[in-house]
Length: 157
Image (cartoon, rainbow, N blue to C red; front, side, top):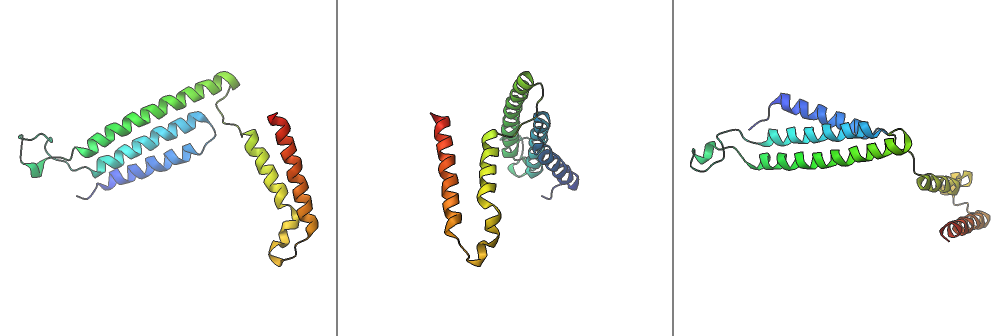
């Protein structure tokens, strides 16, 4: 069975719009992206099913019966999308209640690790492929690492 071209285009648009919205920083847009992605998945499963008579043994010949598996999978996908929607609504409500907005902020720890990685790369690593290694650079890197470890230990204690 060949799927209808209209269904394929609708699935593509729903999935593309859902993924685009998932990449936003606002939880409301992420929620809309999850909903659109769930609907796109449901439409994709719908196009995989064969149409025919109801899948009840005894109502008609088995060759003309529709496939019940896509219907069961769509019901499962609806439940999963509903659970994700409820979870994201709770996150958005909590963020709005605490911060007054629903934008996801950068994690402080991630930003610190990114800064440390940028410091390790530094201007001395531009000639990394030339084989020109100085022992002074290694000593400076070890000193920075020991300072970072002592700062981290101070925070933990």
